[in-house]
Every structure is written in C-alpha cells, then in structure tokens.
Image 1 (cartoon, rainbow, N blue to C red):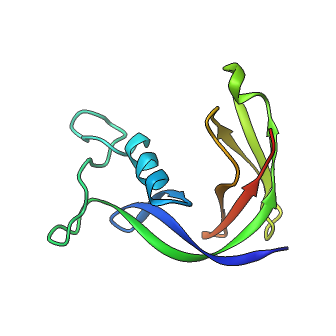
Image 2: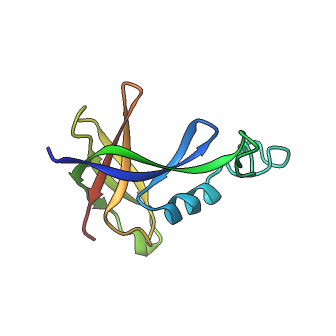
Image 3: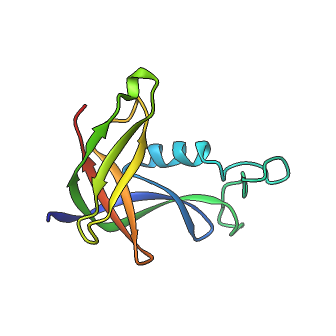
Length: 130
C-alpha cells in the first residue's frame, strides 16, 4: 500500500467538510455545485451561500491542508460519455470497503476519493483508465 503526505483542498462550511479536491479551483467549483450551497430560505437542502471572511466566522471556505493520501487503482463501470450513469469503483486500502462514486464525462484521473472509516477520513488518489 503506497501513501504520501499531500496537499488537498477541503470545501468547508464552518468546520464541516462537504467537498474535497486536489486543487483550489476544483474545490471551489465543487462547493458552488454542491446541494448545500445556496440560500436556506429558498432551498431546503442549502445551508448557506456566503463565504467566510476574517471578520465573519460563519460561511464557506476552501482550506488547504496536508493529509496522508493513499494510492488506489479504480475501475470505471459504465460509459460517462454515453449519457448513462457511470461509476468509479475503488477499495479503501485500510478497511477494504468497496466504494462507488458517480463519474461525470469530464472527470479525469487522478481523482481524490474518501472513506470515512470509523468516523476518520481516509483520503485516496484513485487512478483509472477509460
């Protein structure tokens, strides 16, 4: 099992992590497209649409952090370019649980994935071929 310490970017509302990515740009895009981003008065799933600032503790922020990240080989099931649902199937190297992530047609390897093994986040970089 291969691992390394890597910078990742977490999209957080206050302290809760909602999205994660390998770049700031991807993390911000994921926050903006997440069901939790929006006005709670207008959307029952939204928790907020403001960005945190030094003066305001509440809000979204992209946090750059160092984490141990494992390398896993993943398999694409389905064809994301055909309009059908496609998935990225991978196995957590620590708990051995198998996960399936939705895969869009614009997804490119490597992709950051996460297992919440016993309430502890385990990040992995999934390498896959189409």
